[in-house]
Length: 80
Image 1 (cartoon, rainbow, N blue to C red):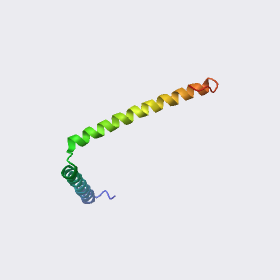
Image 2: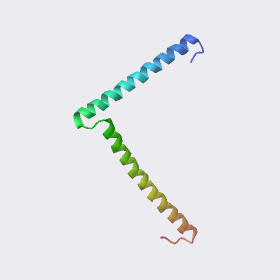
Image 3: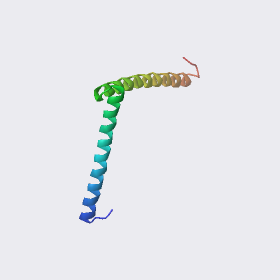
Image 4: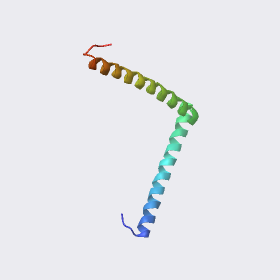
């Protein structure tokens, strides 16, 4: 990228245009999803939060299993 102020300004305008296009696309997708499925943004966020909580719990259980296996291997290869 050039250090020319006009080039920098043009790059900023291009970036802004691209960001606006992405924003409008996401808004359109959410509206279409809400229309077709009946879920609005708040419900979608609630579902995602629930899924992330479940994933976090699963990862915690997996981590605990790995710690137990590591401790068992350090204690002479016993499992449990």
